[in-house]
Length: 154
Image (cartoon, rainbow, N blue to C red; front, side):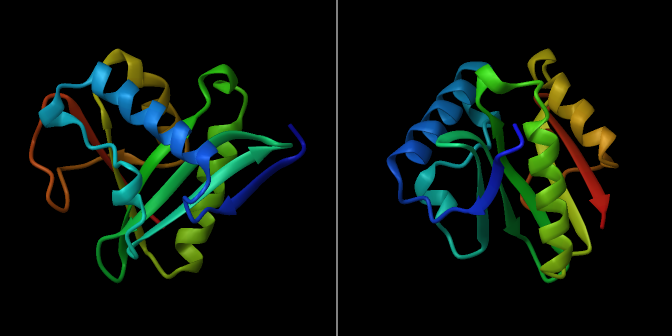
């Protein structure tokens, strides 16, 4: 995986559209609709969102985004690794890149919402490894037994 490239993506290609559709479909299958916070393609194309794709050779293997909440605070969104490539270090490389870019963009805090179910345990472990800790709901989120909220000072 030495050829992993992480690039800002304008979300215009068919590969990323399919990849994100699979993500939204999977999240809907795991999480009650009122607790699903995965953004669809149109929602990710907003000007307050920066989106990255991780590409290994010709293959799209992961993605992630940040959404600006205010001048110093952003939210991590749409972190996903292709299921056949999970546990191979892609998410760590992607998260490292996003944290670095968020700092470069002037953010001082990055927060996220992820699921509280067993399925999301690897994601929660990844975020903890990178220094995120549990926090109260932020932005427009409300307390939800299906959600875990985490934050990190950059």
